[in-house]
Amino acid sequence: MHDGSDQPPVIGPSMALSARRRGLDAGQGIAAAACLGILALSLLTAPRLAALGLMHGFWLLFLIAALWRVAAVAISRLPAALPAPPPDLPPYAVIAALRHEAAMAPQLVDRLSRLDYPADRLRGFLVIEADDGDTIAAARACPRPDWLSVLVAPPGDPMTKPRALNVALSRIGEGLVTVYDAEDEPDPGQLREAAARFASGGARLACLQAPLRIRPPADPARRRPFLDRQFAAEYAALFEVILPAMARLGLPFPLGGTSNHFRVDVLRQIGGWDPWNVTEDADLGFRLWRCGWRLGVMSAPTWETPPGGLDAWLPQRARWLKGFMQTWLVHMRRPLALGWRGLLSLHLTLGVALVSAAVHAFALMLVVALSLGALSAGLWPAAPPMALLVLVVGAASSWLAARVGSRRAGMTYSLSDMLAAPLYWSMLSLAFAHALWRLIRQPFAWDKTPHTPDDPGDHHRTGRQAA
Image (tube, rainbow, N blue to C red):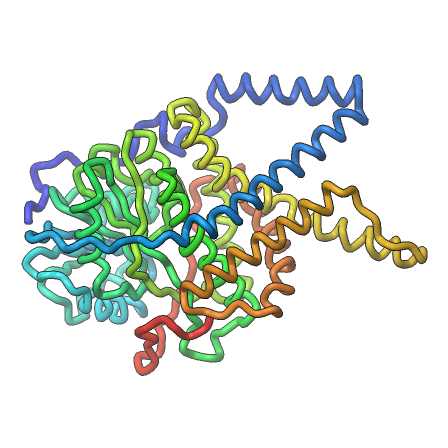
């Protein structure tokens, strides 16, 4: 395999498409000022009409998002044909960026060793920062296949996962490349399926996303039933329903942080990952589209465990939402370059996710307060018909996507999970507030999720156990 030693280093996208450039550019500033001016003028001259307009605008936004989820369930049901493998498998590189993961290194190496791909066509890197001596020592002590090496990243800023990925990408010159996280257990056939789909997917196919499936930790003491089940259902709706539907419609989408498969030449051409974006995966999906490339999905999954309790879930979700804000702002600098389909996708995914997270808790509290107030006065709770429609259709569409996605992922989604979901959705508002504060104060800080190895005697090879 060509090792890329004669290639220039990969350092990320240009400043115009990087989260490193903070704040609004001139066009965004003018647009924001104009919108705020129109809103202020409307509230001063016709406050009731302006309030009604804002309210109905939000209702319409959430109704469109709900109808999209229903449509995605139907669209994603179309069968995806599995192409025949190419006669000559391309070189494949595997990258895993590790940070304070000494305990996870043996498990990850063991799982990567099971990948079903010709060893002479494989090359892998465990990328570790130079100051993380414990993880370096643990990785080097593991019995590794010959194709998997430990790569110590040179000192530099920012000290983030995407920068580490770029360090490894600089060592790769051709073929395909994929990314895994410390807690991942990829299906052994994932690389072969990706190679087959790239070979038959056309010249513009640059990336494939494998489904991520959540299963409970092997140790019962580490399980958090409410958060674990809601997190698993959320992943199932995204990776089994929404992303397959978007891929079938030929739309761009935010990638998951792991199990993305790329053409190396394309990834190098667009600058690799943005080291300054804390959701470099979400950004990369839209940057590929902006540069004229297409994204797809595949069927061989990667299994993960949920983050754990609230102390781990909240920083992780806040980082995701902060990264969504970064990515949305970056790509809204030149929105027309996305085209109307790319712009629609950006708003349907990142935009709706951010607005929904911001208002979930407020909406739930308002519904509860109005209902209790009406009942205490001996009245039947009343609501505007449009608000009631949005509430019912929105909840039903979310439940539908979670139920269908869970079934496809081999998990259960029970009535109790459905009834508990609004509380989980409301918790996103706490994460949103934390994310907004962190975006202002610490935009590039990376809140790392802690991981614990599974019990080596209790692997769920089929992934069929209910989360």
